Image (cartoon, rainbow, N blue to C red):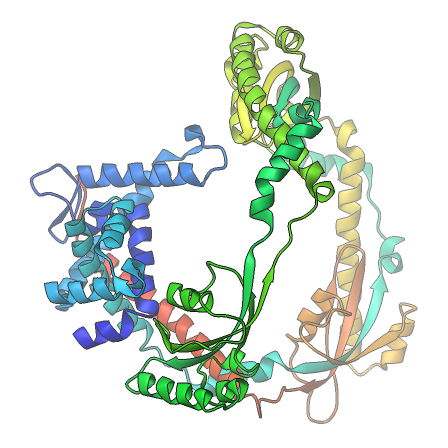
Length: 622
């Protein structure tokens, strides 16, 4: 097992473990991984293992905090507590089942295995070596102690072994991938006959009785939703910034402060030869160094020896870069060279590099004229930010005690705006904010006696609103919706008539009528579409979808027929030829698709395995 750890810890598996641990902690909490304390009240028992109330409560709190952190403007009232509690409990049950299964299979890491794994993880290394301080800091950032992390790592690694064993065991026959590629690259040749709505429109009638009957049957569709007409004040940093007076001297001072950071950075152009880490890496690097000392061409040796295939084809050239781009050892060597010099072999985590400095340049800072508008706006926004906080506090105080917005607007020199027909959803900004809408439709505000609180609808904008008029939900009269119903019924009946017409024409074609006669019946013409692919952009999507779902034409050369229709047209389709795609010479695509299908199947099989464990578990809830 130790050898497996050494082989995998530097690659994807180490990163996956860390990611899964962080996700597990954020979703299910530390105790969801480490386990709770015995003797405490439990919220569930899984195969005899308790999930404690403390564990559950802590995880719910962490999940709530995570959701708040993901909001642009955190609002606890937007969180669905019941949904969180349900998801957390199910997550804890599943985590417990997986942990028990790993234990039953004897999948565990010894203390030495855990030490080896931790020391091998790049996340805990500095300059390629394990750093205890970096490790401790990273663990603290996860909200854990070292012992907790080690236990969590041990258990998560065991679960990952199960996941990998199942996911990687999925097998897909390459022939399946070939068949899929052949179908995906298939083309079809067909003809279409378009039937416009005008071909049936004269025969479609909608009477007043039809409209009345439809109205009576669908009254719930014709209800005017509840809405409010509002007055509101918007306080915005952007608006305040436009009012700030910024002097030219202030802008120039900021430019001088920024000038050093914006220009003058030294950039160096490097070429390198990378000898990938291995048993003979140092010996090979010394061999290349000797050949360079003997006068052999650097670019030629890069193409011959370098493991960095991309730069090797360019003679090892890496282009220009400043500090902070390369590995620290590489950077130190590069910036210690004079132009044209070649370094001794430099060891990094990637192997040995032989570096040549081929150029040095300095970037220039943008001119004052180029930057002054942006700098002035930045200063204005900084001043406006302070003003914004002060005015927002005053606005909150005044609007809370005032029965309307006239007083706050006058005292703070703000503009009152109006918006009519604000509904409970589907509004434009700022009334697309759930917290603001919730306040608008609360009993106190809806009555018109109070203003809303000052709501931060985004990071730079706050709104306070007042209901001028409340419009309760209202059943619309027949007269008010008569025209709408007429148009709906007419469109539906035209579509039905087009479908009937299309079916009749397809039946005639199947019975042997000449395509030209069928086209003449609707004053139309057949359009040819040769070798059309599935993603063709010059044919309507529903036509392509239908054409590619039709059965192949018979070997005698006869066509197969189908139709599609909509509210304004129908299309009859005559499929003439199907040409399968070729997979010869596409070995790379076949291999990639086979791997993808295997991954997908492995994920499904793992999900099914987890579900089977969950279904067979004995779960008791108090």
